[in-house]
Image 1 (cartoon, rainbow, N blue to C red):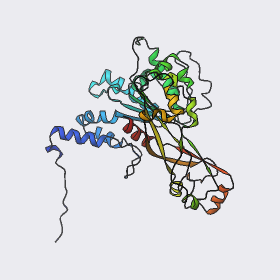
Image 2: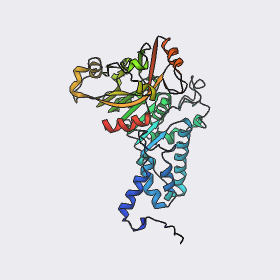
Image 3: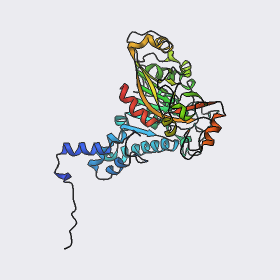
Image 4: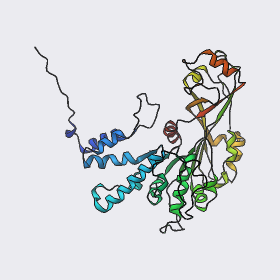
Length: 383
């Protein structure tokens, strides 16, 4: 007797409209946290894009979830985003049923490592002097970005996160809206209130050196600084001895904090910075390439005076009533004599690698933030 295969189908059409829409939205929402036990696909938007192809009703339900958080990890992604905005401009004229106003739906935008291309200034029409030095071969058409399209969508996001290597995108966008004919001096042409900055180096001058940049910084209510910290560890501590070290950690304010132009942030309500870790690193952390780092979440009092942030950061006990510490896991890399795989110690590396590291005297362990994890956690804990 042959067994008949039973094909099970979900009676989706029998659900109420409200429940069906809720399921569609839930399925379309991208999972941005890399801590998820199930490995995320390379494209976290793949499911949402597929659902948009089902029907016009599905597309209408999915678009808000698709645009809620926009990730622009590379220069080519920025170009693609601008092309999508250009397409919506065409739809507005020729196919109203397909048109989507991105500024209504975008809530968070992340611009990761995007090297400065040869983009002429909006008004001087001169190339940036360092453009050729930082030119990325994968920028595609970023040298012809239309900031009249990009800027309104970028600055409509209440929460903006950007790598310092892509800071040019922010100041060109600010320049575009600031000098636009429609801009009224009595109002600010952006809705951004939270700014997250990360990267291996920091560049404040492009923002503090212009009227529009100064006004932008002064309007922010939250600043999150995720500049990688450096941990110094004597190499005389071999992995076995590391297990014997005290598990207590000594955390300190990172050295780069003094370079932050705190005077420019006139309306800050919250500050988030990583505390530099300068104590024991366990063998487990070194093998797996991740280490716990404390984030200092500082909530400013309503009547704080200028310089209060600097005072608290120099003497944290002053702001005990206004601060708390949260913990997050970040990537750990050796800045010299490290393993080729990016971890300080791994099973593929022999003990000679450890000996080689020991002879170097001091190891510098650089902390690289997994921005997707930090984003999910940071906005969760300070939002």
